[in-house]
Length: 162
Image (tube, rainbow, N blue to C red; front, side, top):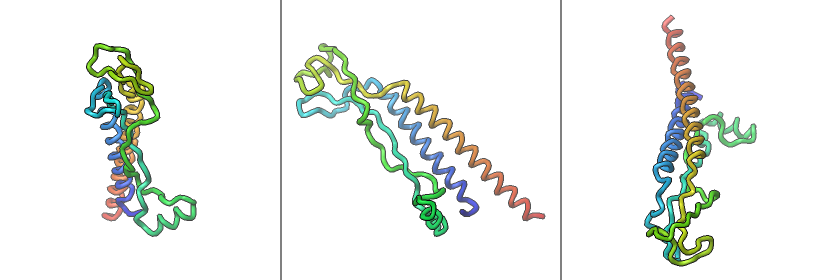
């Protein structure tokens, strides 16, 4: 790893955590969005679905990292992270609320959605706040690591001044 390798890794972590915080803010902003413009085959509204980011290790750029990774049984050693994709949360189901007077209420029954019910988002405010705190702490940790790397580089340059 070169002089700026640690800074590059911290920068990738900062970018990843900023994306997590942006997605969490977007999820919270859309917590009551029941109309996205998409319809089921039966013609009922599809609400906003919680979004999550998936991160993977960045591919190795140096030959040494590749050899070390293969020796230790991993392909990526110390290269930071990158976004594999942003996906809708399909694990958490939509909540149902009975409100037959709403324009978003189901007019045609379909599997899991009786007539008169509204599909609510699958966004849970408690989960989002925990994710926001986690992303914030990880961001802070990456800032600390970046500052330590800058300090080490600065001290190395001072040694050269003699």
